[in-house]
Image (tube, rainbow, N blue to C red):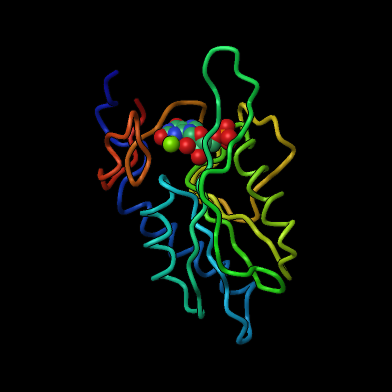
Length: 171
Ligand code: XMP
Ligand code: MG
């Protein structure tokens, strides 16, 4: 697979948009309550690192990891591999995703998080790819809406490669 000759989204555009998302989130979470960022491994790693530094709020960080079966004979099942150990009951929780495609992964993660009875539960995704959405969810905050193409960089991988690229590229 080859890459486009210029990035789909440049590092500069990402930086500006992440600052904008942090302002949107900051306006919705005022007061002293700590916001728990639940970061979806591995793809949201870099987005979350930038977002948390742009947020002017007290935050703590937890991680969650899921694996979806999208191969042959796919059922779309999502397997939860790692769950936060901290108690989320009564907390303000923000699920931090890299990309929303069919929405199945985020939907499973949100339903597990809901079962922990947080005070509030919201979803931020850097990228929103609505073309193949199956699960009836939409993000509370989205960085960029993108067309139905496979993207890498800024945390997103193809076979675990290209996560370290500063820009986002279409393959
Ligand atoms: P669903 O379909 O459950 O998928 O919303 C979300 C997960 O699928 C992966 N995904 C991608 N990963 N480039 C990637 O590197 C892409 O264009 C892409 N589209 C979907 C990703 O792991 C995400 O969490
Ligand atoms: Mg991935």
